[in-house]
Length: 298
Image (cartoon, rainbow, N blue to C red; front, side, top):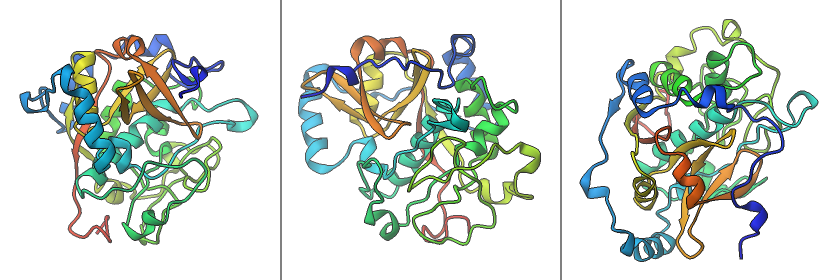
């Protein structure tokens, strides 16, 4: 039984996706933002379409085989409690990091999750999971720190520069460059630190971040396509109600979408909320692939 308080949650504080920014996020703008930097935009392919009458059967298969998007994610991130306040304004970047890490791991077909709040999963080290810094995107999107960033901005930055790895990793990869993951609470699987401007990024960090770029994207044009993507193991990043989250699992019984919120908790969106996300949502289908997964930056 899902606690009704966890469905269609509207945060009582600002997390970084105000209406003034959200209204700029149209499908056309998002497509242009990634294509400008070499991203490949794919129209929703016919083979990913699943008739609604078959959703329950596919969901059951995903449950049994561990094929949900959040089965390829092994950590929560936490943007809360920033500088003594309720929250930082990094939500679009926490969402994007989940989208990237799930796509990265899905390419390996290694089930890592779903993530557990406040816990390090042993498989993270065994499988050579890699964690990205949310600040490596957010600091470029909003040099003022407060006020948030829209989806168009952060997708463009990820397509152009890629992600700098988080200072916390499940194992030592010997990265030449890394960055604190958040100015928020962070946790056992995410480093936290003071705000850092782009001018103070590690020198030459693009040498490392180029190894961690999204390559192929899908921008759904209907709420049914969003659910179909999730049923096909492809998570969907969305923005609604002042907050950006990443959809990782469809619950057919309760007709809600589960997401690992960037406050160490699972929450849910009803179909009503899912419908609000159409036009400003995205999915990362593929990413750069290293020659050696144990040495992801070469």
